[in-house]
Image 1 (cartoon, rainbow, N blue to C red):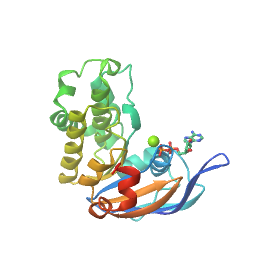
Image 2: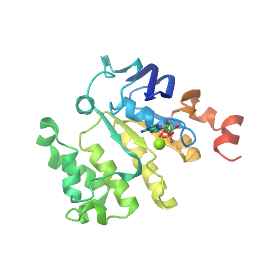
Image 3: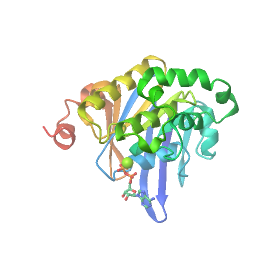
Length: 234
Ligand SMILES: Nc1ncnc2c1ncn2[C@@H]1O[C@H](COP(=O)(O)OP(=O)(O)O)[C@@H](O)[C@H]1O
Ligand SMILES: [Mg+2]
């Protein structure tokens, strides 16, 4: 579904991604793990077109997407849930959700999609008229996910959705990711919560200093000595 081939992304002269090659198959949950500063957010921003790679190619199904604008990439079916529950603070919850459905095609079916989002996150329905800035951290994360789903993505990328959440909310979030996949959405999941992530993911990539340093089935990664020491504290 998504193929990156030797992708290199820079911030000025600083090379943040080094020959990144990876793929995500339809209906998979693929995890991307790595320490702070490894380049995970840079990679997601490069996929969604917020950053342009200096070289390399990115394909979504048969189309090249490394040279097109973010809004076009959203239309093709990729939605990024940004880190830190970034929402529009001075808009209501309902308005935030509507922002996620700005294309003509998605606007037509927005009421139905909003109902779907409310069914996943009943709290958002209760608070639909509240300004987003009045929400708790966890609720903002829910809203960011809900808004990302408003464009009915085929591939959803999540940037540390569980960051800063209570253990109970973390578990709820992982349940929702599993549910989304059951409904046919493909997931690329960036997480620092490595143990729980590997438990729900099919495959995983490990990133260090801008490079993919290992990849494999999640079940194998959970048994890998380097992963255990570096990421699972075992
Ligand atoms: N806007 C930016 N300008 C310059 N350097 C950046 C910028 N954003 C991130 N970086 C650098 O790129 C590297 C990767 O960052 P990032 O992708 O945010 O890592 P991660 O999401 O894995 O924590 C880090 O060294 C970081 O300091
Ligand atoms: Mg990050």
